[in-house]
Length: 380
Ligand code: F6P
Image (cartoon, rainbow, N blue to C red; front, side, top):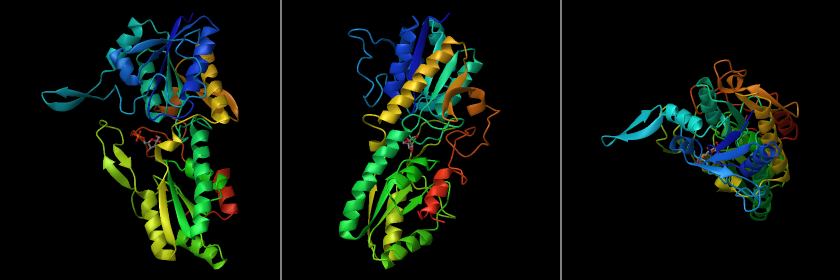
C-alpha cells in the first residue's frame, strides 16, 4: 500500500513541469496518498529539502497548470553519484547517493518520481539498483529521451520557435535579408526541424547532419534568382559543419562524466558565412531560454497531465523502476533499464553521459522526408 510519494524535477526546466507535478498530486490525493516534493531536484534529495504538496484550499499546488517553471525548482548540475564537494580548498567529486537513500527512507517515501531527461533518468535507474522505488517522467525541450515518442516541454519550445520564425519572416522580407534563428538542440535537431516546417524556413541545420554551408548558400541563391531576396534559416545550437566541430561558448565545471560544454555561436557562424557566400545581408537571433520559460501550450498541458497521471497509476500498480512513455501515440511504460541502463534498446550515441542513449533524428523520420519533399535544405 502506497502512503507517501515524492517528486523531484531535475535538469533544465521546460514548460509543463508544473502540469506534471499537479497531475501526480491530484491522482495521489484521489487515492489517499500523500505527496511531497524535493526542492531543486537531486540537490534537494541530498540536502533533505522536502515540502508537502497539496491542492486543497490554500495548498501550494493550486493554479499551477498554466504556470511556467517548477514550483519545486530544478537543478542542472546535481549528479549525486558524482557530486562536487570542497575539501582542503579543492573540489573533489564524491558519490553521495547513500545519503539520498537515507533521506528517502527517513521520510518514508514509497516511490520517487523523477521528472527529467537522460541524465536524470540515469540517476533514477541507479537509485533503483539501490532498492529505491522510482518512476521516471521524460522531460526535455530537445525531445531526445529514448523509448518515448515525445517528451513534455518539446511542443511548447517548437511553438515558441515557430512564432519567432513568423516574426523573422516579415522583417527579413522587408529588408531583403537572411534571417538565421538559433534554437536549442544539443545533440538532437527535433526543435530545429519541426519549427522549420511549422515556420516555413528555407534551410534547417541539425546536429545529425553535418552541414556543407555551400549547399545552404545554393538554396538561398536559387531563391534569390527567383526574385525571393530573403531567406529564413534555422540552426540547432549543436549543428556543425562537415569536418568541423560544435560551437562552444565556454566550458563549465558540472562534474566528471557529464558534458561540460556550454554551446553557443552556431547561428552566428552560419549567418556570417551565408552573408559572404550570397552577398545578402544576414542577421542572427538566438532564441535561447525563451523556449523553456512561460506557459505551456494546450498540447503540453494535456501531455504533461497524461504523463503525471500515468506515473502515479504506475506507482499504484507497483510498476516501479519504469519510465512513463508514449508509444504508438498511447501512454505506456518501459523499464528504466531499457532507457538508460546497460540493455538500452536503441544503440548508444554521443550524449550527456558516456552511457547515454539519446533519441536523435533518424533519416527515415517523416519530418526529414517532409522537409526534403518541400525543398527545405538540410545542409546536404
Ligand atoms: O537540455 C536541454 C537544453 O535546452 C539544451 O538544448 C541546452 O544546451 C541546454 O538545455 C542549456 O541549458 P543550461 O544553460 O540551463 O545548462
